[in-house]
Length: 151
Image (cartoon, rainbow, N blue to C red; front, top):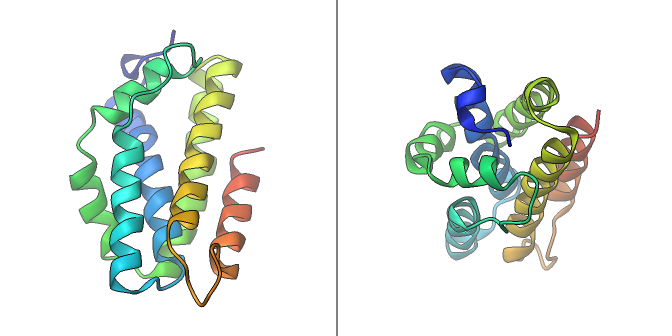
């Protein structure tokens, strides 16, 4: 089982921050209003902190991410403009995928990637923007993230 100790501190920081970065990028992709934005941000933090299924191949990695200080990570990303945040999430997704493919098993990598993408989808689903559950900007970003994490 791959753990955070199989990565250098810098590598682990990139792996652990990816779910927060993805979640916040989706949340900021389209303005959801004050309450919608609060729900989306709360979803990011709740999903990152949620307990992983013990039978999940990436259980150890997900649990380690859940133990990381996501508040500090979120603060660093919140100041970024929506487009820049989305671009940063796509670039980070590509980098983290390469790290996982080098260090983790294929099953762990696939499971971790699926978890990150599911988190992004949950954030998109939690608030309505312009009368739709998932806005075109959110859908476009989710598609870009899926492509980056599927290479």
